[in-house]
Image (tube, rainbow, N blue to C red; front, side, top):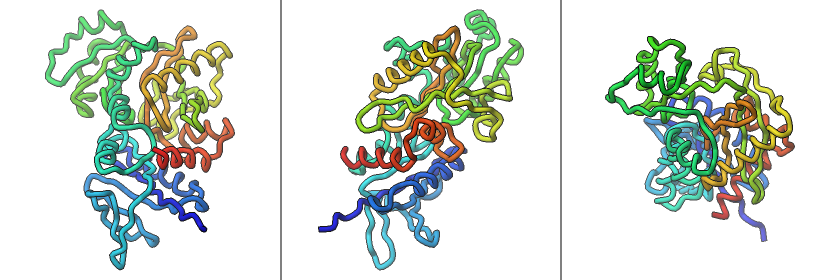
Amino acid sequence: MVMSKKSVAVVMGGYSDEYVVSLKSGQLIYDSLDRNLYDVYKVVILKDEWYFLGENDEKHEINRGDFSVTLDHNEKLKFDACFNIIHGTPGENGILQAYWDAIGQKYTGCGFYQSALTFNKKDTLAVLSKYGIPSAKSIYLRKGEEINTDKIIESLGLPVFVKPNQSGSSLGISKVKEKSELIAATEIAFKEDDEILIESFLDGMEVSVGVIDFKGETIVLGITEIVPTNEFFDYEAKYEGASEEITPARIDDATRIRVEEISKRAYNSLGMSGFSRSEFILMDGIPYMLEMNTNPGFSPASILPQQAKIYGISITDLCGNEVEKALNK
């Protein structure tokens, strides 16, 4: 008896500016999944349309009632699993996961609660502080609240970082060195989100840590040192190569072990699953957490695939492991 192959949809795109990166990430996963085990398809989710991409790039609309697609000759295709590789909304903030849960569709990565929580920087750091994971001192503001610059600077010192609370990419972030620049920086951040964070500046090395659950075990794929050519790891540095990424990071063993331990603790205490990449600043050997991404970039140039290569896990195995977990949910 021949086992029928499972059908897997690689779901990419998204509603934010990061959809471009997501399409590249999706292509790598689409190319890497083992065709002996799976029939692999592409699904693109954009603000204006959700569609299935056929053999000759013809589009078929996705039926949102059950996330199926009706092909020619009225043949209906449903997916055994969806490989979610959308960066930003709706795939990284829980919206898609909650919808898939509601219709009984299996998918890779973490659930809607972890996605929604980690998309909110303030709430993530608040939850993780209960598990002894340090972060920068910060002040949280909602749009329309009065901004007392004197009080903010008195509390946090200068320079400070001003950033949107919920934004997948590094858009809307400013480094403020003078009190006079603070209000303008908050306006830039409020363009991206109705809630913003003002954080004290941590003067140290930025590292990006890939953590996954692989074959039943939480492992740190790698610790990558980010050396920005700009002031900090901004959108340009992240996506246009204006930073140098060094894997493994140039840190001593004691620091490495501390970073690994804290990264795993953060992952496990949030009940995470699937790919994740956490950003930390190392200051005096202590890792301060900035944020956790639950659907990090996975294009060939991205940090996670680079780390997997050095760790010695092939992209095929890395992606296959995700699909198997989804199928066994």
